[in-house]
Image (cartoon, rainbow, N blue to C red; front, side, top):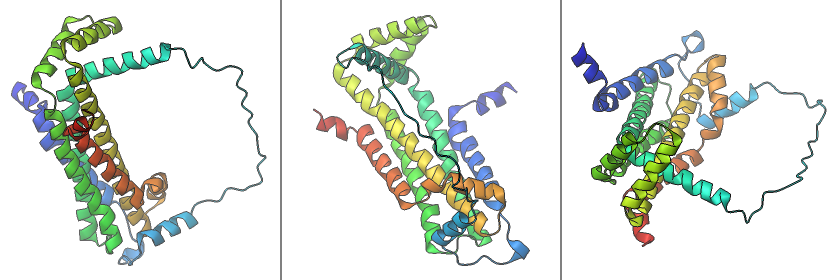
Length: 283
């Protein structure tokens, strides 16, 4: 039992086995729950036509409600010359960088698990749609395959971002965090000691690397929302019930090409930050 728990708790097992397996299960269940009325074969309805049908079926709210005008009165504004907010922001950023360095392996593993889960979800959902004949036009396939390809690239850039910070820096941050009492003051003290020991250039490098992780996470979320939208929209087209209509309407803002473009831009920006291209431009 101890050996089994050790394997199940291993970060590599979670990232490369458990995460993809969960994505496969979610993708198969999510894409396979749609139904067609009377068992009819799916029609060659484009995503734009399916979206129009979904919008036409939405309940219309009456415009007879009384309009309420909200007036906002600002009786005072903080003094723009007050430097306290700048100090607070710099202190919060320093603590965030310190914690980022200390927990970099855990952050990287968590992001890898998330990307692997979403990517296998997208691939499985597309495979089930292929077998069931739901994605039967080019437009459907573009929005099914593109998020999966973007997610694979996200996984590659995540590896670059993880290796961009030295293991010695990570171990040093972990040691400082472990030596301090579990309090806000202890974390701040450890952060100050940490930044006194490393060069300012490396602080800038870590800042870019942390931002790369944020952009990768945002790109993953956009891909997940796009995939969820098109799977649910396909189920609505083929006779899915109110559950699929609700999911499709919730994710409608993320169903267009701008979402794919935004995910790609975030991915490229994350690569530029993690690979050091942006750092070289600032030197």
